[in-house]
Image 1 (spheres, rainbow, N blue to C red):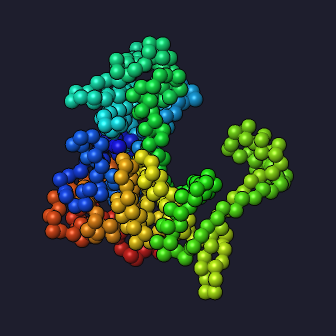
Image 2 (cartoon, rainbow, N blue to C red):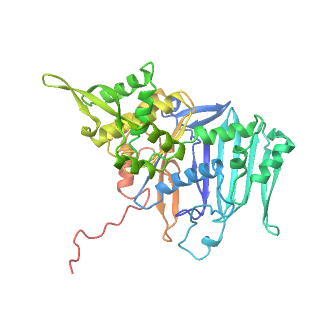
Image 3 (cartoon, rainbow, N blue to C red):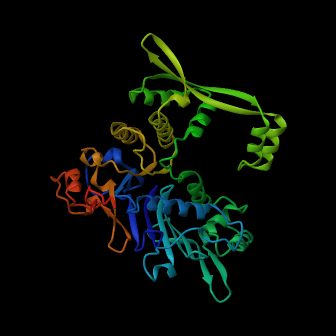
Length: 431
């Protein structure tokens, strides 16, 4: 589980901003909201970020995604840039280093992973583990400016032999993290394997407003031998008041036409897959067929006839299945997209009531109705605001000094928590 994430000088974020999953002493629904990762150490399962347009909500999620990507992916060329922009609305930030740091827990132990970089290279990277009260270094990399070279120093508890250490250091180019270079090595099982697996399988990519997860739903239905996942999805669709009683996956094959052949050849898939597909001469399609109850019986409708809300909530249901059955951290941007507020609240309640593992959700939303709900703890709510210089500032509701008797929804509407967007006159100049 993630304890906190810090980011500095990344897109609209200038000064260091920190989002934390450490709970306050609030006793509201504590058993449902927190998970004990080690004796006496509890972390929150959920975070909700509010903010006006362009205030930096998505930037926070993008920073997490960037951090995950550089820990997993080795650049194709040592001359390849880091693929981001620093803060650009002043004269000095663009020339300063960017920094990110994540504190997280694996197998009852705390890890701290730190990264300092600019658009061309990584200057510092370190990974520490707390097997006791004092930290132990697993590795530390330092950039040698005189020789334009990266040096990596491994700690004794890294569990990596000298030959593998040399191989990893050789692959750690100036724009590649030690962790990504480790992922390319044939190393023995060690704590670094646990960390790499956390970034690969535990920390997921952003679910954007454009993602309906149709591919994921179809893939799960295709491999659902015992029907368990299908029953789970149907249960949520029915409980969400959709008039759906069943759904099936309709699989078919069609001959490849000359037009389809052109599309396949230009598709962003491997050459091996293209050759195999063209050799077979057919292409497979699968569609979800939804069975609805009507006035005088049941009727089957093709997925194209279903609403965007149905598809979105079906995708959200598969996300819920993942976080309930596997240990995942999933960032969701604008979670309210295409779904009614009551379904949004229902989704959060389902997660809180049924989650027993170490999964976490970090979501952004514009729907302030959640601030009016008694089941929403104040320490899970964050706001992004912009300074007069255009820099993103992250504020936690529980730290804003709001009296416990004051309704957060009303306080937000009155501008007591963060500055509301200045909308100006409703009359526009027409000339």
